[in-house]
Length: 255
Image (tube, rainbow, N blue to C red; front, side, top):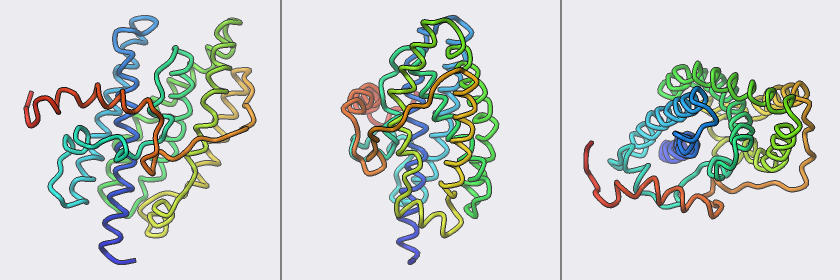
């Protein structure tokens, strides 16, 4: 694999990680001021800030790898929806609290095992980002898993709502482990992670929590994917319009 090909693949690999954190953080931030009670409102807002902070580190590094002079702000605010490479599960509307909880649990479990493995990357920058963010990932997973238990083994209504959310979101989790050429190239170069290992650990954690929460894991009748190729749901356009509006109206401003 040539050096130029490696650089292009590394850029795509890093931009995917950055986009996942950015879009998930933007969605979760929509709960600010709308949480079910004050402590949880603050908790979700802080988690959103963690995700945006992670996105900043990754998008900054992506710009350096690309070598075209683009900054983290350029990559966040001046790409269109087909240029974003996040998983589709990240861009889905927040829905109710049960939907957000289930989404965060699935994603938090993925992030935790993914970044734990990424600590061992031969790319020192990615390894450093992974090590820095892992403690946050651990807290995020503990937080969302506890809420899965509260809702699943709570009232009849909370159980019904979280069950519906799990069923709606499970088809989108397939994409998390659908390795493509970039994933395989990064793994072969000891930069990326082994998604098969991450998937096994993810399944074990998800199954254990669902069992304890008295929730059934639905069988996949269909799957959703394409986000890493720039194929998104209609929802991302509205998300980006809100997220990018100020910077596009007044480009280059500092505040």
